Structure formats: structure tokens, C-alpha cells
Image (tube, rainbow over all chains, first blue to last red; front, side):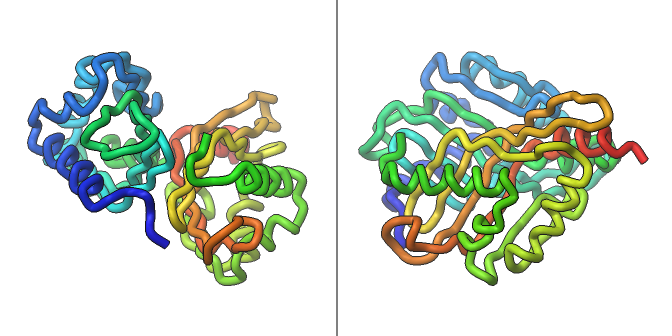
Length: 144
Length: 143
């Protein structure tokens, strides 16, 4: 059964991930200036940030922990003003050398409930990820 | 508010979570007999299971360590045959009485079309803060 996103919407989302991977600050413009970004507190620099610029503290730290870090979006689920992107986070841990592919869900709140994504912004973002796998990659210690 | 799910769909989903918390086996019937269950491999008994009965191994492993473990659904995001539940997993650690709350997403696939009550879930994947989850289980069962 088809989802509610158009091909243009999906291209627009993928382009955002490319901008992020390339370190292009244009990806920050996809968020409202006061967007809330939430990262698990079990991760280094995790917590709640009050703007995409503030959240650079988290993103920059990921760059210090991993070589070539990039989330690879695989699937896109939209329901009104909410968008979920499922995929895997890829990178090589600078501490352990481990090459990782870790499952994530990115949850976005859009500024509108309908219409093309390119006409909207992200008002909020939350990262759900297999945090134990991230911690294991950067510390070499397995959970449990 | 969901733009793609009816209030009846949402109530049906919430009821499923209530059935699970009450250990009512009826919740198993909401899944196809060969539904795929994927739990993070960073958790005890994590991995991929075929069928809700096999998946009980994971759920039993968790419930043997903590009291009243249950996901509390907060919102449902549906689109085509996919559905994401965002919520919080709650449990009480028998060793200390400490209550734990772990953010999680359940990602479902549903067969067919129309009202969810007429369909079956063909897959369920858990994506969550496994570091918090595993720490709680380890604290509950230090041995």
C-alpha cells in the first residue's frame, strides 16, 4: 500500500541528508530557528537542544567520535505533521576502529499537516537509536 | 492526531497494548502466525524471531528480570502499510524498587487495507534507547 509522501518529498528528504553528510550548513535551514532537537542522554552530548545551531554541539561531537559519520535514510513514513525516517547510522569509530551500521528512527515534527515537504520546516526532531551499539563502538564495552 | 488513522484504529492499537500488559494471549492474535519480530541484538535475547509465540522468548526474558514491564503508547504514526508507535517502556526493578522509563519506537507492518481491526501485523521492530534498557536489566539481575 503506498504511503502519503510523493517522490518529490522523498527526494527533498534525501537531499537534506546529503547536505548533512557534506557538512553543508544549508541543512540547518530545514529547521525552524527555535526547533527542539532531542538526542538520547545515554549518548555523549545527548539531551535537548533549543535550536539547530545549538544542536551542532551534538553533531560536531559525533564527528569527533566517528570517521565519515552519516545516517543513511531508507524509509519514510508521514502522518500529518509527523514524519519518521528509518535507516542506519554508518561510520567508523575513531576509538575502536569498529565500522558500524546502527538502526535509527528520526522523528520530525513538521510546521504543516499537509502539502509538499519543501514548503515546510522541521519544528522538532528526535533521535531514537540503538544507543548500546553506539556506546559499544566508541568505548569497546558491550552492554548487559 | 493522526491524519491517516481513524479514532477506531487508534483505540484498537491502545487496546492491544492493554492486552499485552495484562498478559492476555489475545494480543498474539493481532499478529500473523509468521510475523517477523526484530529486537535489538544489544539486549538479552535480542534478535529476529518468526511468529509471536517464538517472540515470547524475548518478552519472557525481560519480564523474568523486572516487574510490570510494559510499553506505554503515546502516539501513532500511520502511513500505508507502515505504522510507528512512539512511547515509553516502563518497568520496576525488583532489586531496588526503582522505576525505569525508556523511550522507544515500535515499527509495524500491517497486511491488507482498511480498518486495523480487520488486518494482521506482519512485522514488529523495536528501536529504543538500548543503553538505558540494558542497564536496567543488568541492575535488576546483577548476577
